[in-house]
Image 1 (cartoon, one colour):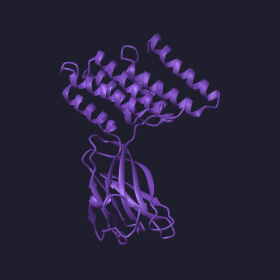
Image 2 (cartoon, one colour):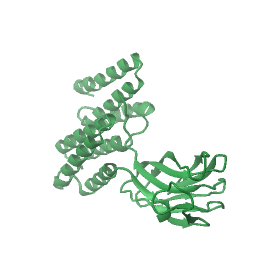
Image 3 (cartoon, one colour):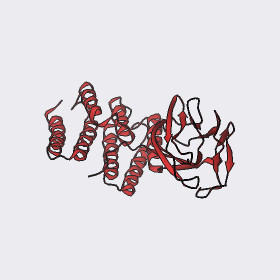
Image 4 (cartoon, one colour):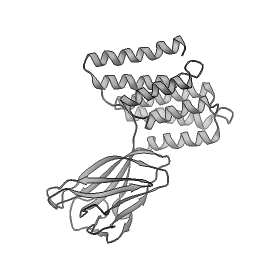
Length: 283
């Protein structure tokens, strides 16, 4: 690692330590996030691939693996190291990802989308000798998912499984109705998620449960599955959202079903998918 690279990274470490001394846990995480972004911005002549990987592994202990915008920054860095993105273009792209991440941390969605629009414009306008076409396609897909924001699917528009049925006999639902009759094994709903890139997504299930106890349903996509805990509510006209983070691959179906170990018996109104931005928020 060169002296200038060390100075850049040490500045972020010093800020993280200062925030910790002052009891500001979020400020420390924001400083470590800046450290990761600065790390991805340093070319191989300034920091070796091995050194970058070692530092990134240490950051993963505090921040988790890179996701969302941080994952895109890592992809740009990797492609640059492999020679599939020109170094000058790479720096401009990383500047826009950094701007987008800082906008998210500040709660400014409009500024985030403007930064991602500039990122997409740079990739789209770049000739093939500056960015490999396959790399460009992947980057545009990843940023496009984040820029698009959340997408809500009406449960009644999904493919119904088993004994699942459509109902309108309770108030408060959206769309033209909701999915009910989830009282037997293998009853549920399935839809193909319109996600253009693999990644973690925030999944929000809007449900009703007046059974008097917590009910379970299983969310699955590809090889991943997760048992959802759906607490009881006041009555069948009351709706709530259950929120989880879940990996979804482009083109994969998403299923919510009364699985073998579940007790089911809930109504489902909507399923919302929102890309995980992977950014620390809050001051």
